[in-house]
Image (cartoon, rainbow, N blue to C red; front, top):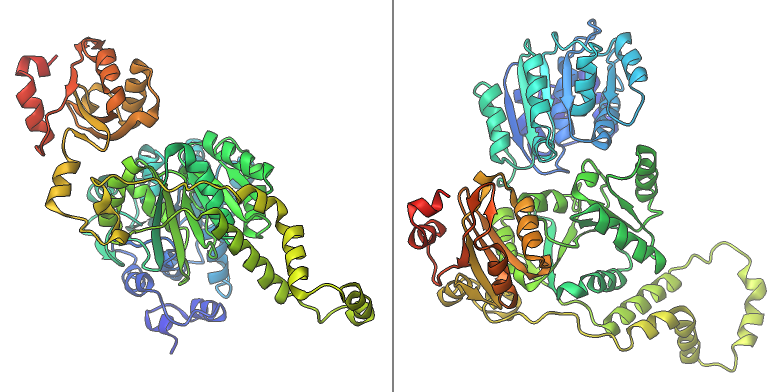
Length: 571
């Protein structure tokens, strides 16, 4: 008996997945399918991307569908067009031998009139992105009254993208559902609230530890000065000529700028960001999947739903502000049982994030040196020679020309031939790297505990104490009596203090934002200017107070109470 048949799936579905070569279910499939086949149990599945989640909910869903009824019985909601199409394609393959099951993908960027016509023909499963689904509901083009099963795939991604209100709207409109199946890589409070508000005694299954990443991912980081970030990226790409990867940036402007610079220097790369039309996006993704592009550079939003199994490297051009985003980025590599590398280009002030990430993903991070120029050239030489040695000479009448070639090179030694080949192929590379500077940033002893390669104790009490002092590693810790209650979130707060002080973001270190007040690490040389610019000003009628926080490791709330009277804090 096939292991999938033992889970309770019908013969037609088992036949389809057997033809695909599926023999043993993945851990999430093993635990989810028997529960979901009941059809009446709410379910929460926590598992990373690339662990077989689509089959975990898709196979039992196909098993439960009543083929005689041509109306929506199941609704699958996912964050992006790419994922929507991927799920639709997978369901078509899984139901190859299950005649009478009809699906429809509805998403933005495609003809809504065509989607409406297909829905009217009668489908049992609708796979949708939130925005387009809302459009169809408001046009009365889709009837959700008979939907029995609602699947939320990559729920954390959808909430990160701002779809909470849309999800609430849809769940309130599927009043006759029998169960909700929620799948997510992480379990932030927003996802937990959906479970709490809409699900009844859900069965929760976690594959691996919560918020942990794939064990096959090697987490690495390099430490460079901010102005050397692009050069470090370029050098790392040159050092890994077989790389097939994704580079993540925080903004679409950065993605476009870096892509243009690398294209001008001959790299096979394109940018994927929100300014692209759907047609342009499809073209870029088509070239990347066919490996016409070696690299894709993308923002987090634009990369949602990318599902390519053979990605070898994920590069964080900058670490994300939201640490859980790192989990999603790194999950793009090491899929389908393969191994992969996720490497981050860091500034020394970001090393505290590395410590946080080690706890969040439950993995050790390894510091890597930015390769020097000679190492890059040596790696490129060997890569070229390996390709030369491995060239297929079985096709073609090379024997005809061989005597002439031998005669041409009879007065030149093998060493000279190799030298001339290297000069011909790598002349520009050699010139570029012959005087290449060392890009590795020196880490002050306050932070060396984060560098496991130097053999020092990462958690020494002395270093922890130093890290939390008011002034460390060239930074001064400032207190300011504004926070999230004033309508700020981290990005808008950062923009506010930079605009008011007319300083560059490079002077900022760690920001600890609370409801009533915040703490900001600022380059000590710029701290006086920031205090002078903000202290005493008003924001929405409140008097701003900013000054240096005291040294020592105390709770931020203690610092606030010591420095300001209750009357001052209420201003």
